Length: 153
Image (cartoon, rainbow, N blue to C red):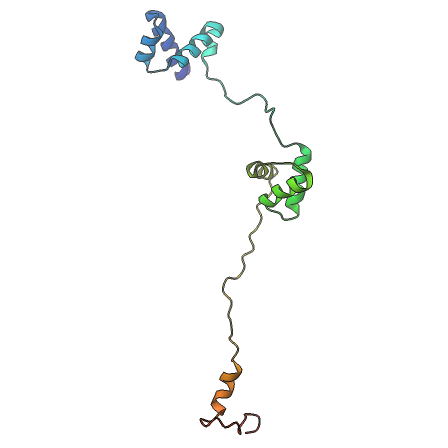
């Protein structure tokens, strides 16, 4: 038998001996709703009801993404659009609102690889062009006589 089942059966035994839910909860260190849940299961299903159950829902009625929406998302990703841009395109073109997380889940479920970042070179070699005054300064004499231009010297 599973250790969890043994533990919950022990709680029920203590309750049946004491016939006091408050005292049983204090002795076992559990809350009253927990004790009520296990008692109800034991009374309706017996020992088989003492197994822990999955909390996963049987269906998702509020599932937002249908096959057509999924096709739209994949079409926009093929055009190399990111998740935020896909979200805005869905609103703008189809008047359909989805969260970024939902769009991301659809892309992951369809095994779409993430967009590759194009890294732009951050540092370029820059060459400064000499100003015209800097070019002519060595050829101009101190008396500011403009007789000797580089082309005529």
